[in-house]
Length: 466
Image (cartoon, rainbow, N blue to C red; front, side):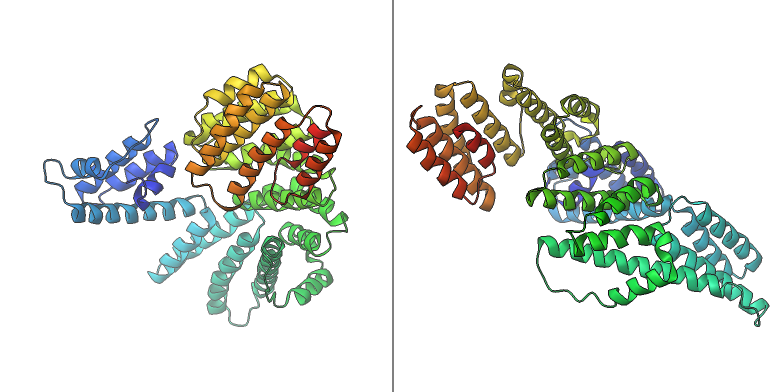
């Protein structure tokens, strides 16, 4: 059952969602089928367990107690509950958008012929949108829709009045141009990783219009303007610094999800600069991570992605911020998804202890942790290779390398990762077999490592041969 869409959805619900979804499912307005209530109770209770193992049989027994198992009947029930939960998610998406709700209320009241009440709700919608701290594309798009609704009332009352027309034009322009610029940036960012031919449309004309009309005063335009030129002219670093400073200063003008995307775009730019040999950009990555955490923009629904957790630790170790990394590892442990929490925590703590050369503290963290993710398991095994070699535990290293090769063959680790980790074990064996004063052999091995295309630990191997 773990592969079903229903379970995959239910498993992702944080605790507050579970409670609210229970109220939704049990509401007779949305659901009058008692077996769906029981099925949801089974799934929500199972998802709270430390090692959840839902089963079709258990789900059917809960939904239809005392009845013989019927796979088709269960599939229909699961489908019904799945769509009920999708309705709940749609409600949650709009729950915090008060201006949109007020606009929709005004439109509904107008259709019922209650125009005075409709105008009252419309005024509230306009005030709520203006009072919002957000100034992103969606803010101006919603403001345009509110003004458009207001314009129809003014047109009916005073056909000769130009009320709202300039505001409609201004907000429409900002929404359109900001959206166009944002899309151009996302397209360029995608092209930087996956080369493809795209037709960006009238982006050059849009930029000229933005500059001529002084629209760079709007954060939703200015941010993407600088990011656009970051990608178009990566050698002109002032665009990055302007983007970075504006993002830190104006990040709260964007919903957290969009701010998160902006931070990721900035970090990816820095990573590309590092890959091009500009190692000072490690410090910029660290600054972005710190500011993003401080503002809460790197969290989603209160959780921190395990990938971001690992990347922050790796960056902090690279910049030498060991004490900060230690505090981060502990502080954000509870923000990790539960299923990966302990493995990510122990691995990152082991990386820190290794960086401090505290091998005795690192070893038990690597040896006892339960790494469910094969790639994290292989990363932990790679760290053990380094520790065994640097502490001259060659017999342990020999056995470990054999076990690691068997693990790679047994697990379905495909493509790049399989090649990379097999190469790590291969060169570790060659490094261990190298005679202490064999300079010619060391030079030959160093050249082979230097020429190897797929080897993430190339720098470590080269350091051992110096």
